[in-house]
Length: 268
Image (cartoon, rainbow, N blue to C red; front, top):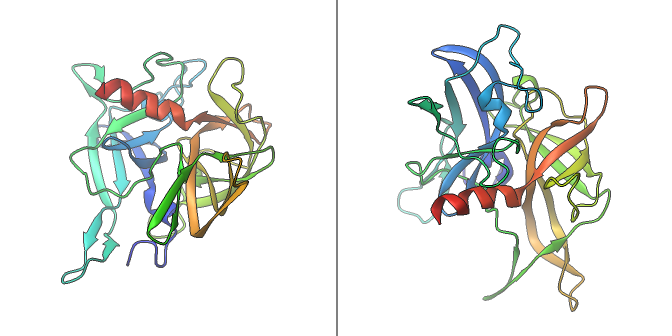
């Protein structure tokens, strides 16, 4: 399967994750691979802690707290005799969540455990397929290219891409759910770098990538209000964290800038 030929690129970047205690499954969730100064899995922090992000209460009805995670990802393989690549079958990676009782995931350098984001380095799997999470979109014009920052407005169409109730769409592919931007993207909420989406997301989708999927982008360039690409691209906007309450379809998304902050702080 040639990358991008028959499968949307964000599908290949999404990861089904399973939390375990020893060999016993506790829960499943969603995550995604990013390529930013290395290779990383991004997910919601509460997936790995096994505790409610706000109350710190154990999520599992059996009281289990995970100490391992199994991550599914895809890698690029080159077709012999050509320059073309294809997505290899799913690869499963088993990782310990703790070493000497210390978490092996990375948290935000300022917000720490209050931010529902966790980043796991996967640098030994450098060929994993993942999102570019730079804050610019590249438009190619023949042998020239131009970068710009896209602009977003209320009720813009977004995608929450993950595994509700642990369900895939076959071949370990994620399920794409339509979402709408439900808060002003360029403003934080209650001092937190989050925004809201209107989406019928459900259990298991926490940790999903939230992105704009289009061939058209509003531009911050005064000379070019809209930019067009020959094919669709994903601009990753954040990490889905869950609903504001069980009765609502309004979901919380931590901004993707938090992921860059985490990685930058680790490498700096």
